[in-house]
Length: 395
Image (cartoon, rainbow, N blue to C red; front, top):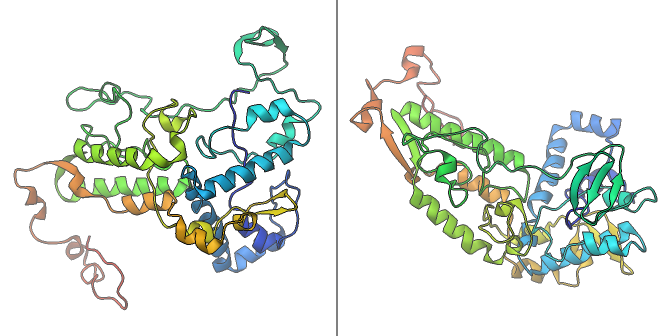
């Protein structure tokens, strides 16, 4: 084992527990749910119910960001509850394992692991956790730094992954400078998408985007849509190249640095949020919305009964001596993904420099006609005529 990690109860289980399991007790070590034929039929027959179910799960996950505020009441509650839950799942004894695997830093400093069944597996009679570092692989198995050789039949490499701060292939700009040569002091990426001095270059949720909190898929989709909007702007306005301004990125990073002074990510843990270092700029989106949603609809369903943690997660306030109304008004923490989506939904065109194909930037106006005329498209020639006030556009 290489390093400690927080093993949390599952997030997003509130909808499952409230809608399908109806509050029934489940084995905390076996929390995967198999949808019944009745569940599936209901989803098929009632799309609105299915949509609401999905939204409940997503809202729970998205409402957790307040725990990432260092020393907040919510962070302290999470730390206490998850610590007790980890002890419970490992059972009595195993003190060396508990001392090693339960972190000293706050919950979320490194990515949280739900890990159903992981702790339970480590304490089985046929499992021996090894805490010394690996020196090298030998024909018999693995030699650890204490000199001991562990004889093995198979080695499964599961030590993590390489975060692609830079593309695996070489990218050079018009000055024949590569990204590797340009990024001498670390990532230099605007909203996880665009790099100064590298026009028409886009990445998907790169450094500075939403890596730690919330669902990643909508961030990926919205970033792709952002890039497409940039491409459409270039196509329709006669733009040869557009590149984000360095001063715009400098100001975003200045905001990053200020925002993260009080988050758990700046604590003494090594993570890829900080480019694999203990102390470094934190390349995570500085999200912020009201914690009224965070606490009043919070996802941590943990009930404390006679000091026993019962692990399924939806209502941390049951486990808390804090008055919920006071908590909702006092804390001003946040969630990250929604804030990121709101920010990049519409590109800030003023943050870019442009090179036009023609001397006159308005040459794209052409002959003054639109595509709908040539296509004889009635709807395209009257998009502003509508029954209700929805958005409209002209191709």
